[in-house]
Length: 393
Image (cartoon, rainbow, N blue to C red; front, side, top):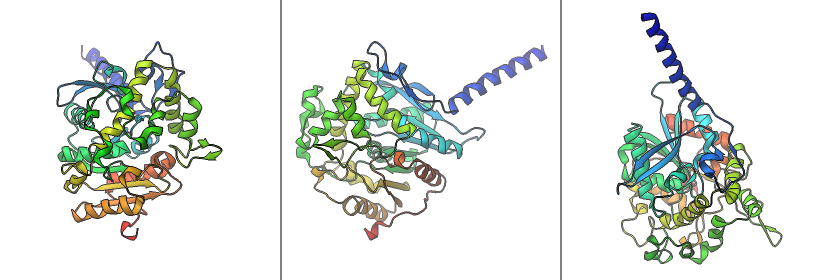
């Protein structure tokens, strides 16, 4: 009897170890050609690490299915935890290199797809297409803190994810140990006139072209021109024979190839999922803007000095999208980075600022090794090497 019990225990432990090991080992990502009869994100896209699913609630009680990668270092109990939040029109799939480097250095990394993006699209098609960034923060808090039991973690966010992380730190200060802001939105204020009040409730795509400056970019979110997308994503887009000085990725890697293939092959994929992705991508321009309206006395922009978590702020020196023309600002370093740095320093919140050469709006993808090393160093020590001094800007 005892022998039988020991054998059963060994089998159970072996199964548990295998499940843990599989979830922590990278897998070869791929994107199959889209098939409108299947779920594109569930059946035709594989991320760099195994994706898990959970149902999480926002404050209205709405239940959202969240797809997320949860990768732990092997044989390291109670590792530090890093949560990475993707940008607008993206998904967590482009964090593969960052996850791998962090895991090898003893860090557990959790990468959720926000509601209505990536792996968090298929299970939410019956949910409202309209949701705020704050609702997504509530959902991720429910997942990370309430369900996974992680009371405190380092939170990192790219672009939209950067502003998301700033707002998350304001909403849940007790849950945030440090912040990593990667080419973040939210460091400039936008005039209210560009964000009509009625737009918050509309679900009609024709109403999404809500200010002229964004019109050309909005079309990219619904574009079915695969070559246009490919060229723009890799800084190769030409207009009348001249190279357009903007795009997503300056370097082709497994992560950037995956992100691009997802967007291109989505065109022929499930039409409901493509519509939800495109609709959400454009709506989130509004969702970002209404949180940082210049005339709003209670905007999150005006509350940043309440944050007391150490911050790592990273921008590419060739940043093509910030500052936005509608903000009235022209200089990224002098008019966005420096004021934020001074404001936070005055409030007693240290900010490490780092600029990556030959890098654009996706510095974590353009310089994956550098970013990975900085990420590990900051998570473990709250410091990184070779920082810039914004006082000199």
